[in-house]
Picture 1 (cartoon, rainbow, N blue to C red):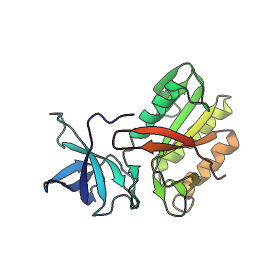
Picture 2: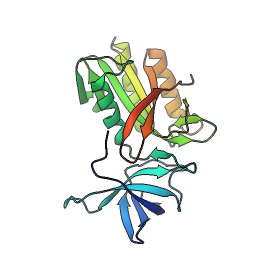
Picture 3: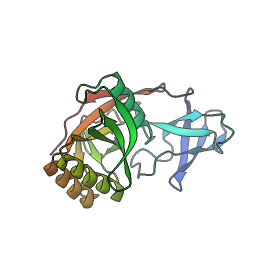
Length: 228
């Protein structure tokens, strides 16, 4: 997945009201940028951090910059845009992802109780994609970074899909390069953890993949192990 326009660097001044941020461009201008992430963004939204923005000239958009990446202390990049994982996984599925071979990929198909599955493959395999960029310890990526009732609901609906005899897969895409494995942040959201355990018992599969991130775009990386 390539960014539509070249990214520009900036320094984060503050993030506020969940979807807004103030940044200072390298030319000294201070501008507001859209923050496409409703989560906690722990460790990725500290004032003074180097960030990368995607400019736009769309007259329908009030904000002319969108926050896409945060530069980590070691100089590597982490993705903060929660819409990116679906685009990356969609491209990977259509190109041929070993763990999920298919002939037909349909996005945003209705299922469950007024929900939409991220991808329906060949009319039977349900794939739900989750964005991950939370890290607290070592090379562990963790999900979620804050309570998510919606995430727990999706897991229960996926469990029903599995009980009905269809393949159901939750795919966690890790948008940071300093993580080599995934586990649940059970202490942050016990409700989600319980739903995860119910889904696993019902036959819902779990996959995790890393990403390759540059200022030009984001691609799917290697498959990562998941802690039970």
